[in-house]
Amino acid sequence: MRRREFIALVGGVAVAWPLAARAQQPAIPVVGVMSPLSVATAARNLASLRSGLRDLGYSEGRNVKIEARFADGVAERFPVLVADLLSLKPAVILVGSTAAILAARSVTRTIPLIWFGTAGDPVALGLVDSFARPGGNVTGFLLSSDARMVGKRLELLREVVPKFSRVGVVIDPDYVPVSGELNAILPLARALGLDARVYEVRSGAELEAAFAAAVRDGVQALYVPEAPLLLTRRAEIAAIAASMRLPAIYTFREFVQSGGLMSYGSDLPDLYRRAATYVDKILKGAKPAELPLQIAEKFELAVNLKTAKALGLTISEAFLVRADEVIE
Image 1 (tube, rainbow, N blue to C red):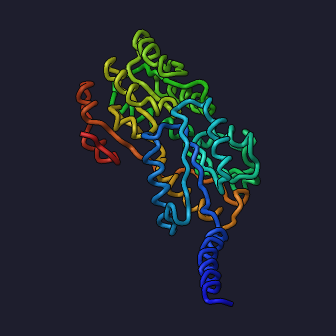
Image 2: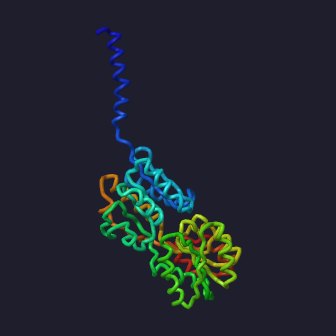
Image 3: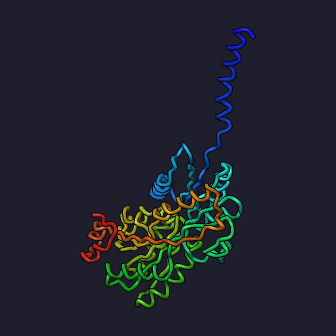
């Protein structure tokens, strides 16, 4: 073989070999996230997920890729979002609400789904066979919204606003888990000697009208339960409540950071951090059917002293000591 031909042959192999090697390398697994919230509202949850994955040895772009899609509080977007994520052939999808998991489960029974939602009764919804052994492609980390949690919020609200007797409950009636919370809050309110009035809000455009109706009805305080629509509109809700001088308790501290009076509920970022362990297990071959549903273990109380002062409320030092976050 002539020297020139030999050099050309070796050069061709040198070029072709790296290309072939790259082609044989496994694709980076895609972890999908379908959030009912906006990009800004979901940021804390995603940061916790990323932190949890880093602790387990994952690095974005090297051995995992996170693809997130956001519904901005509009449940009608879920079918489009889940179709988009499925087109990426994800190894697992994290799903951020009950409405979202129902939309995802309706189109896939094979892709592993990690669900964040209200505990309620996932067995009755047909999502799992049991908490201990889900049996299908759904597992998850669920918020607690049982009667004890609802009662605790009412007690905290009464502790800060001791003289109110009529409470307004602002709900999104299209949000699936709200019926369970309503079933708990109405008898609990009566047991505390409170008259509870319910106000439905299906869109941001209905917020001001609902709050105005509450004022006309003589409502003296508000209870705002979990719902993606309400969380996404938290700044608007807090501003309207302040303008109408209505103290309120919410489920997540993002409301308090946006000007709401106080919140008490499950630590959602902690659930996302814990979910990283299930992502790791699934990427290593575990099946959701064998990963038990877990319930929130950490809860957080947040108070906005600036808002309390504007409403003419005095919050005791003993109360503030119990708070996980105090905004001054």
